[in-house]
Length: 102
Image (cartoon, rainbow, N blue to C red):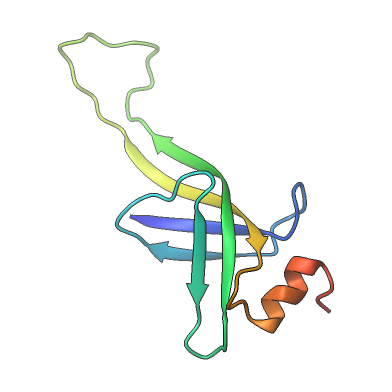
C-alpha cells in the first residue's frame, strides 16, 4: 500500500516536507517511525499524529440494497507525523525538530 507521510515540525504548522513509501501495513496514531537515508549519517524519527483516508465510491446514490455489493477503493492514505529526536538522529533532523534549521 502506498502511504504518503506529511512531516510537521510543530503542532499546527504547515508540513515541512512529505515522503511516499510502499508499506505492508498501516502505522497507528502514537507509533514512532524511523527513516534512514543511505547517503546521510543518522536517521529521522517521527511520531504519527493522525491518518487521513481518501476513499472513492462508484455509487453516487444515498443508499443501495443490501443484496447489491458496490465496493469502493482507497485513493490515498496520508499519515501526519511530528518531528521527534531519537538517539541516532542526524544533525539536520535535530535542527529542524528544534526549530533552528536555516
